[in-house]
Each structure stands twice: as C-alpha cells, then as structure tokens.
Length: 171
Image 1 (cartoon, rainbow, N blue to C red):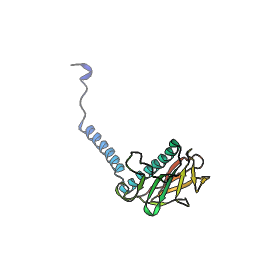
Image 2: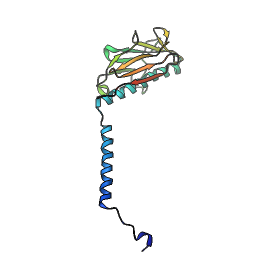
Image 3: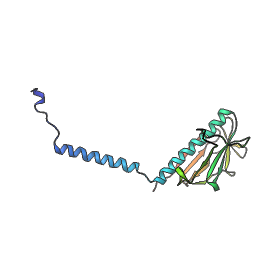
Image 4: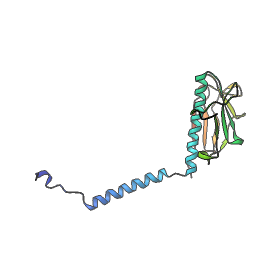
C-alpha cells in the first residue's frame, strides 16, 4: 500500500449529513426567491417589454428617417406604435402583425396602464431619436407611461434616452 494513502479514509456520516443540510438550505433559499408572486413577476416583465418596445420605436425612427408616434390608450389598456406622418401601424419586431401592445390578458394578465404625464397621451420620436410632445421638443424628463402605479417609463429630453424606474417592492 502507498504510505501517504494509508491514513486517508472516506467521509464520515456527520460530514455527509452536514453537506446535505447546507445544500438543502441553499436550495430552499434559491427556490423561494424564484417562486415570486406571479402578478409581481408579470408586472416586472411587462415593464421590461414596454422599455424594449419604446426603444424599438426610437430605433425605427432613426433607422428609417421617419418620425414614429407612440399612442397610449389608457382607457383600452394598450399602446400603438405608428409612423407619425401616415398614421400606419409599424410592424412588430418579429413581423407578427401590426404593433399593438395589449395589457390585461395572457402574459400581461395582472398588468394595467395607470397613467402618463403626457397631456395628449402620445409622443413622437423624431428622425434623430429626439422626443417630441405636442409638436415641441421635450424639455424636461417626462413619465410617459406608468404600469400598475409601480413601474414608470421616463423619457429624457434632447437625447430621448428611455429609462425604467420601479417602486414595486412589496407583496
């Protein structure tokens, strides 16, 4: 027998039990964090989708050299993305029909559009990506859309940078 292996032995029962207990605690913690409130997860996901949609509208305006309008219809719990000049709906990024984002059903069951700081509930991204409201270039940051009173989509003046602010901490 090799001398340095003569003193080596397997793991004791206590060591194995300790490892299993620690692994179980880590697993339980991970599962509890993943198993979040489904409504909260839907709202968080919807906020990210809205952010992505608005960035898509801005990119389309810049890429095609045509102004793009986002028309927010709070009473119908949806928004539409259109070419500003022709009022024609843009296609969805995946080519799956005209761009209408509806909330309150399917993957957005627990999501509702609850507000906007825009007087006309629509704004335009110009050909350079700059935001316009009521025909005037945006001068101050505006919350253009709020979801469930907890997720706020904010457009910054001049650059048109879009950011998401969330205060959905509870539940």
